[in-house]
Amino acid sequence: MTLAGAWDQLTSMVAAIPQTALLAAVLLALASSGIGPFMARRNVVFGRMLTTFGIAALAAILLTVVLQLSRLEPRFDLDVPDMGMPAQVVEGGETRIPMAPDGHFWLRATVNGAPVDFMVDTGATLTAVSDNAARRAGLQARRGGLPISLNTANGVIAAQLTSIKDLRFGNVAARDLDAVMAENFGETNVIGMNLLARLKSWRVEGGTLVMVPRQPQQAIGQ
Image (cartoon, rainbow, N blue to C red):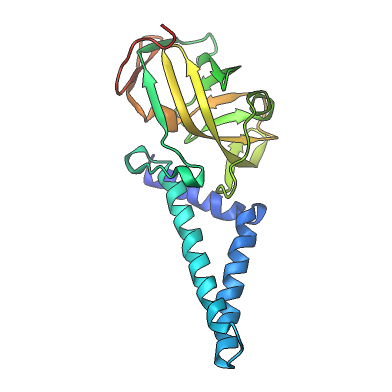
């Protein structure tokens, strides 16, 4: 992901914060760190404690944001299972996807066992799942997840982070892959760069997309 792309993603997240539970946490922490010193100067009981709580809460929120942003870049990918962010793993064997007549690469996958059609989009930072597909796969929004804004044909829409426990197509299997879902996303599901970048390589040969995992194994399901 380019620096410009990362900046656009960050500004979109910040702009969407009021739509998420993060806003309540940020406002509470700011209020505590602001009111606490005022109370402490007047020797009000719990003034210092309130200040400490506010500072600690802001630090925890900042840490959460940094950890989640790191998952957008595989080179700095951090896994924190206790916070609902396990390691994102993509493995399996070489898989070839022929180009469809519309000029896109489409694949049939399973998301937590549910069949879902995806379009491979190298311009998408994150894998995206439609609302209907998310329901079939039993996906749930991540608690405390960063706000996400998606640019679609219908304009900018707010989306929620989720985690795909098991995504499979061809000879490739992905586990605990970050994804976004949104009610107004439409019916097109997208494989984004957060999956492609975790492959050893991917390339287009003629009219075929070739995906090679970092540690090729026996074909999935054989």
